[in-house]
Length: 348
Image (cartoon, rainbow, N blue to C red; front, side, top):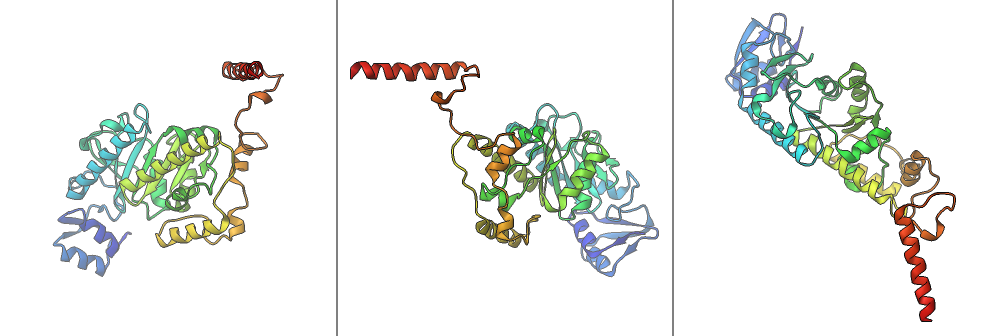
């Protein structure tokens, strides 16, 4: 038996449907009936399971109407637009990446398998239920949707999920390293800590389980040896998490070549987390004290992950290890420095 609540009905009417099937044995709450009546939605009792009730019957009139509703058409176009932006930013290669959006509590629009995200059209998007079964659409849905579904089931606030393979975050993925924290405020507020879900076969139940466990408190998750998966409260919001994550990883990688170890203090991190809490964004660090927020130095953490004992320092040609063969660039720089010294000595 399924209970169709007022909130379920409110989501349903936003799709523009004019008819709703209540399966035999299911319960429509008084609040839900009032909402459907207010929007002149015809209710059929004892019919096939409804989208909001989590039914698995395919090709029902309600599913077809939902799939072709004004809201669904709008979201299909948004998915295609984000797919194009992902492709333009080189976040996906070949047919990599996938995007989905929650249409009702138990119905999802999903990108197809085997298609470049830069050339999606609304006709390629499919309708899938809460078990992963495709209900509408002629293009086969992505094989990795079950990982998306694990996020949706674990996180009621998740409206959309975006998975791609951005190179800079991907560098952390192939090392199975999470990016260090406390370096850029925007990441801390809009994304937060980016954990790593250890590698398993893409699309497998093990991958879905690992990602699903992290989703309630992390909107961006690095998938070990694979890529990044993010969720948001809209299609664009999920993409924003991806963009912010990769930009952060790129900046950290570049910054390692520079001297210095600056980081956001524990007190200032507390201020950022308070701001984040007011925005209604999740974070696993809420409630931690300033000392707990800065227990680990981000730069030492990064170097420790790479097996070194201190942050990267600029190269100095006078400190080249004699036991290591010099590169062409090192040799050229050393020759130039010696030449300059000799010329200066002659002029003196």
